[in-house]
Length: 383
Image: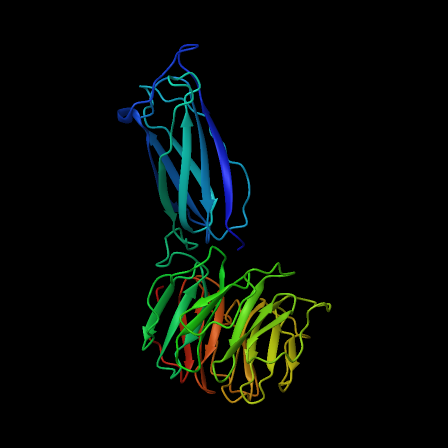
């Protein structure tokens, strides 16, 4: 999902008698409502039915501006209809909408009105749910992007691309979106190892949170979107990685190298820090591992995968790492295999993973479902 876009749609309603003038009155301002719903088979996409009522008679043109959250869609949507006694509440259905909270503003103009071009500017909102494949709405507002454990491993926070969070166990991150959230999709949530809060990073490189701020790439035009974040061991810095392998360091984080400007068979999808050396690993969608001042334990780069890798986690002492694919397959390197969801039907694909020491881990699906393995306890989920 990409940046917020404004899509403008123009609606022209047929006039009544030729040349008839209409003076808008407060009592005749239209009401517009939008109700989001799901359709079977449209995983992740929803439908909204917009209902118009109380439009006054006479010539009328309406220009809508719809705010599409967390979407790369950009097209003009149009609808022309007549408001009459026979059909006083026409409806308009918009399909295949990404989930999120939409804001709509529109201006209605009466070309022949007195005074000329009188306008009113109502607004309304509607929410498109995150829809499961069976046509039911998930208990989340947008797809989940990952899971972050608390520092002591006695809880975790699930976060969505819309920056909404869902806390379980001893997580103290408030549920819902933090103040200062952007309209870029969230791609990472990292706890401050010093215990001073957490950071979230969006695809543009903007960093927000209640932990100390050391800088961001939010005002920089990047060659590729940010896909991950890792904090230094002392919590006095962090590292961002882009899908082209570019590395951006802040605070006391040290630059050890990157894949920026080099050919990649598949884009980078994640990063993990080696707490023992201060180096880091990058993982690509094909499971290729790129080590920078961190030990190389192996990869799936030369193996045919059923589904792409979507995340990785490293042991706290840097003694190994694991990768997870979107079908829930887990690949372990120098760490024990504790189980996976590979080969098991999933309602939604796996979006990420997190470590619980060296002998446990959690997987999280895009609908918020959590799968616990080894020593990792299950504390709950929004699915």
